Image (cartoon, rainbow, N blue to C red):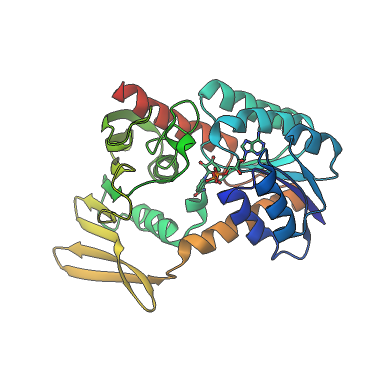
Length: 322
Ligand SMILES: NC(=O)c1ccc[n+]([C@@H]2O[C@H](COP(=O)([O-])OP(=O)(O)OC[C@H]3O[C@@H](n4cnc5c(N)ncnc54)[C@H](O)[C@@H]3O)[C@@H](O)[C@H]2O)c1
């Protein structure tokens, strides 16, 4: 039996708990949150035996093998280092931390204490994005490519997400998924540029464009906003431009699933279907992978080092804005 403690019982803590309760060989033994109302409702919903308002008490007293850290980002460092010293395996939501020094220390302490550290890069388990990597590896439109991502909305409601000292805004918090996946697909980063602004009145930029150049010659160009009015969203688009054609995804679907469209001189090809809920399935696979790593003492496919590398891009994006 894998015995889990959840730290942070808000949006993601609950989301992961709903996945964990489907496993027969997993028990959510304990939960911690500073908000007692949230903690009590989590206890009732998931029938958790033990609850703690202080995660340190939980890590010292509760008989668990592993934790899920799903608190606001600025707390990941303190919680993960404490959990590593308590020799617990750790699934930590992204971004790994607020700065590279913290990320380094987290990785180091987990290694020293033989604690698994998996970072919540769910796109690594999403069939749609994995298909994108497969098509890039096959050079379906040639290489190098420019991967455009366009997305805009009102962003998360919790204010900590926009605080530069807590969540760091969309160009770190949300975009780290893309930085990580682009590193996974294209390799080493060469240069980062950004042109960002604020539509909302918080300390982090919420709108703009970033360009990440890779040593391979490939590029990621991200045009994002969390600054649009409530209930307003922009077009959602992923496309890659390559020397032999264009690949578009994120916009084509029917009742069977989602499709990639590849346009070349010779004509157009549709690739798919990929399950409509590939991201939801990805969240399940991600947790399944973590449990497998804990049970069988395996190294996770998404490590603390991946958390470090993608955070570095996010921090360089903010530096380039400043
Ligand atoms: N992988 C993804 O796709 C994805 C999606 C959304 C959020 N996230 C990440 O997940 C993390 C949590 O985000 P969220 O949206 O669930 O946040 P949230 O604000 O909904 O929930 C955070 C919870 O942590 C609790 N908390 C605060 N301080 C605490 C402490 N010291 N000890 C224990 N609990 C404490 C809060 O009371 C709250 O209930 C963030 O790092 C975020 O970036 C990841």
